[in-house]
Image (cartoon, rainbow, N blue to C red):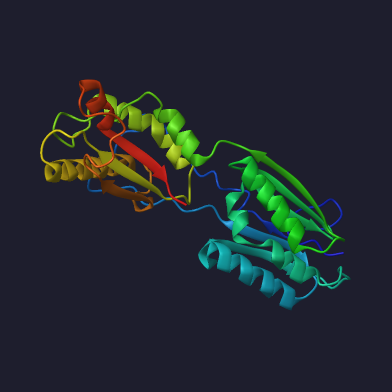
Length: 274
């Protein structure tokens, strides 16, 4: 019996640990900024470890090739061996059917194939994604295979960011892109959450109220978004994973006719990208 994707008590499995280890480092909330001349280097993405044994070299190369195509060759660690023994019919082909883009939605988990039994363990962002994975895996295999979906649903990256920012404002000095102490405090609280989103890109969007010239407001909102990116990068969040955009007064969330509404419209928005 062959075991490629993941661990079993009866044989060595094929393990994709990229699905297992996507948590990344956690940065302290009050970490001092390094000098401007020494920006933080982008943190490496967690590796995808492919391990276990397969029936032959052709199957090994086919599985590794598909994993490398999905995650990128530089991210894949090859620990997959070959040992001659019997395997279920078209076993290697069935294993490759499981290695799809949907697996990238699984974090802190693993996929294990032991003979005709498939175990999927880890975390995903929603019940809908969990159900989709079950349907996709089951539909890709013949009826002799059993799929055990042991995924746990956790808050999505966007939900985690929104939870930290709830009721808070990334505050700037009036009319400028200089963060206030309160604004820096809010961003410091956000750093550990962003550090846990290794491999995910996000967008920082600046907004203003409707007071003044639109062109000046667009420039100010862009400068503020870039100031947020620079501050986060100084605290270890990879800058190359952060896009910035300044929309000025174009997307208000409240009326600009009141002081309260204008205050709500002056904001920084964080959006996790697909």
